[in-house]
Image 1 (cartoon, rainbow, N blue to C red):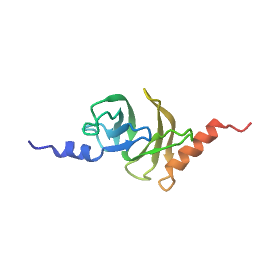
Image 2 (cartoon, helix red, strand yellow):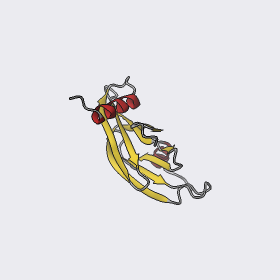
Image 3 (cartoon, rainbow, N blue to C red):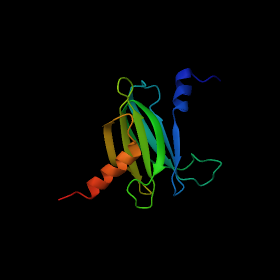
Image 4 (spheres, rainbow, N blue to C red):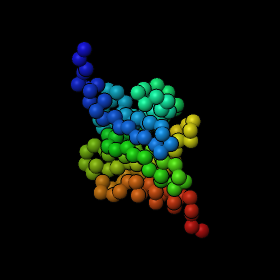
Length: 141
């Protein structure tokens, strides 16, 4: 059986993140969508047997994107001791602007903790998320 080039390309663009709590999170662009726009999905799996990491789907979320999913990582953006899932999307074309989102997983559901769009291509997106979260959580009078 042969795999189409488009399908193989989508498999290659998937990312996986393991949270400190042990859950596996997969991040992938929508199958067959253009590179420049479309969607991406996060899927959370609780690992019961390491030989079958995708057997226990817990929850997921799908969002729009403008660009390609460049990177995903586990990072404690809100400094509460639990990892968030950070997804970096880079625009295709002039500017290569970055969008960054941090997702909170509470053991049952995923939600967007903080989202930033239009970041300069040379900026540290994780540091920007952390700074924006701190500013939103501690507004100055």
